[in-house]
Image 1 (cartoon, rainbow, N blue to C red):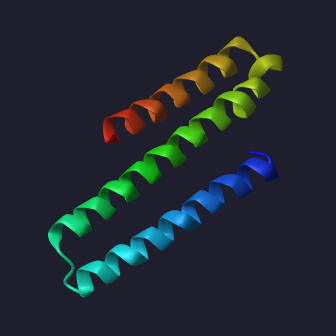
Image 2 (cartoon, helix red, strand yellow):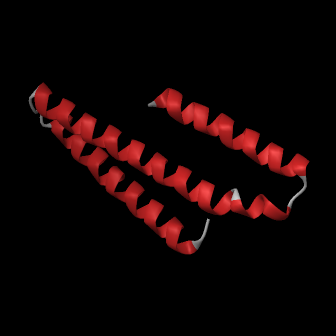
Length: 92
């Protein structure tokens, strides 16, 4: 992953981290359940967007690196990607 993409993903995770801290404060402050659930939904959406961004980066950068590789290596990379993508989809 190149530096620009890495920075973009890290910034997303830092925002999510901040959202989680805010969520903890809501629970500790005994905020109404609806407020807590709204924030849980926001965090969930942010995590999904971060995962989608990682997928885009992987497709653009990591799979592109396999162009000069053997058929076996390309197949292995594709299988690894498919497994990871399946886990991501199952999470969603």
